[in-house]
Image (cartoon, rainbow, N blue to C red; front, top):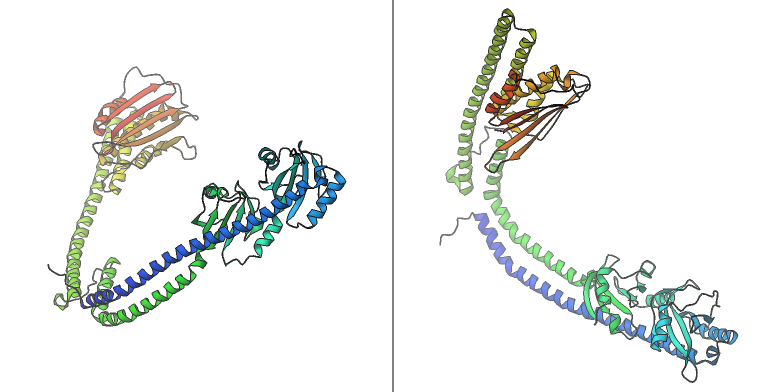
Length: 559
């Protein structure tokens, strides 16, 4: 196997890179191992924090359950006596700062007594917690609710009220104070960037740290509703609503006795801060070692590699900037780079010689074209003079002589346009514009042209110039341009053929002119358009004399 020839500097850099590879591999292995270990640790911590929060909420809910059991068995509550019931509930409320309101409701949903007074007579039989308590006959943890009596937000908890015989008399309900719950969450020792979210079974947030004022009462976003609907606890890395990426441990309502959703999140940035700092230190040390190792190779290679390359690049840049005399001046036997420089110099010499020859040829071609154009224009002028004298002597009417002169002028204008384009073709829009220019007044805007940019061959351009000059002449004499109200619309389109090349279609349409009657015979202009020009265009020309104006359609090859 033949090894490639390498310069000294390249070999030094390759050897240095090979020496650094083991260190880089070890650094990468340690980084991956540490991150995987930390990821598992963070996920376990997040789930543990979520479970602890769930146990704490379970303790709060069970305490309220026990309190409601005691309230439901109180004679003052069972009797529905407003005064006794209110006094009893006020005493209970005074010892229960975590509750917003304690309310006793009969079977019809009427509030019989509450800690803050009745305040209104609207029944509460439509409340979900009321219906569920009567339906299940047991303790109910409701959903986030905005009290229609006090206007305070809370989490309702309800329990049926029964008499001594076990007959259901009504429901006693209490609201967990969300402000109290938020204050209790703030007493926890939160790690920097961490978060705790508590929501009801529908995913409505009832407690959140941080930013409780932003999230309480809002739904957990739809992408995270699958966590609320999950059947078992789990962990996941998510982008929280506050823009922080966290690993969360979540406990869905189906996995808690309280029916609440709880998630605890640890900031990914904070959790991996120590590992990231260690990785940055390792990378910095590796870079320092690489810089020291490569420094020697650079110092040695600068003299033998960089300078020749810079010299060669500057020579090429000067050549590209227009300096055709720029050369590197390198000797082919001085080294690999020098041999490249010598080859580039040889190539530049060849290119310069060919370019000079091409410039002379193009200049000669331009002189020939200008000379040809001059002679053709002189020939056309001579033809025009001879024809004018001959037609005048023969007694040909002035109108015929004018038509002949106009056709020669159109041919001359088309010839000038093609000469400017070196007879390589012309833009279709420009050909049409020059052909109709003598017949249109820009101030009146009566001739409109519209179509895509299309290049046509020289032969096609000459034929079209004659065609549109003929159409414009007839429009001025008999058609839409013979009065003050008529107009001409010229539209064209291009279509790519499967066999290659473009095919153009052009439509000349007159409107608003005098009433048009089909002629009894075809004049020279019509025959010129439909036969001779169609043959020159290798296409088809059709003229229709409709009552609203002349319509001429042309189909031809663009080139």
